[in-house]
Image (cartoon, one colour):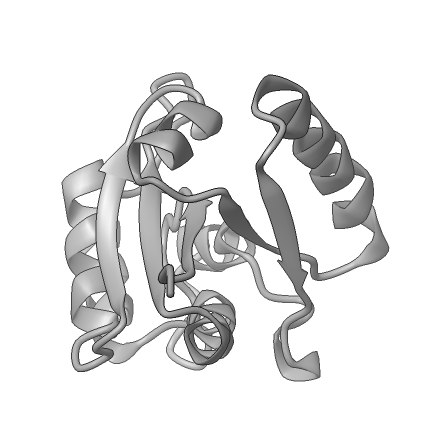
Length: 160
């Protein structure tokens, strides 16, 4: 029987409890989940790709069927390289749906076997995004209820 491998791509800048919620629920459904930090050179990030990957690895420690990787380029090329055709995406609000639907359709045009599986976060995370965390951090707000403790410490260190 072929293992069901799914790729969860994102910037994860920084990883939030909402991301971890989706990863944990996906890991119950798929044999293996590859959480892949997308390298987006035109976007201004709080943390480097390596820092984001390290924070994810620490946050996901002990999860046996989850791994962390990084990629640059087209998602469809990365998915093919990983020998899968399943992509995980999160939908927080209806506003996410239009963008995610468009990306899923383009990906399917580029690589017809690809399937995008959408996860809605638990209700307590529907408002949560990395950009919200970055905005709060920019004004020295408390992000400790939004991200794992080691991520909150890294954000505090970055603000100094």
